[in-house]
Image (tube, rainbow, N blue to C red; front, side, top):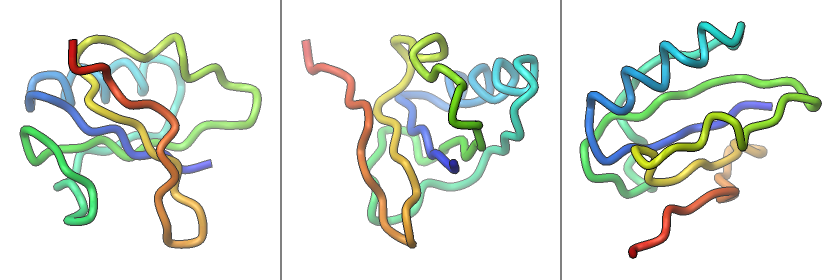
Length: 82
């Protein structure tokens, strides 16, 4: 499955990409698609297998994570505003 993570800062996106690669995932940094809002304009697209647990990569730098499904985005994580 293909996912896109958006971030509050460019630094957070770079760190997340490095973590994905260290975990053996395919990941790349790219501009955020216009239909997804973000604070920094940079996102990471990454591919995971069904058995991979996304929860272990979620941290305070992530704004949201969406799953790419048939050219649409389904939100699977949204940071709280608190």
